[in-house]
Image (cartoon, rainbow, N blue to C red; front, side):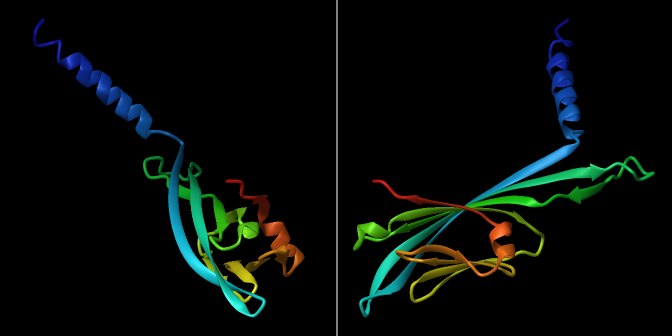
Length: 158
């Protein structure tokens, strides 16, 4: 009886690992934060402000079950759901403090870039573009850019 007692938890552990390893859908997540300091022009002088980019990605994948070899299924990737929270904060001017929330479906080769302009900044995801002008708000180049992103803009309340 003493030799059987350790066997029961080991069998339970192996059964749990085996059933969790056979899941059909796999997911993953990524969380990252980047802080940049930029300048915008106001009345001929450059005013500094900080941009904090918080990124959250949810990866989804499933397995292709149409193959004859059921031991080695091919993984089929699904578009990644990306949420970026962009916080704009100035120590010199309280009226420009804003929070932008961008949501989009990321492809395998999409790249994200945030670059400064004279009036604010530009967000580029591959060939899609959002312009943000401080004090004016968000603008899009084309309707396809507007359809690609889901954008929400909030005032920051401290």
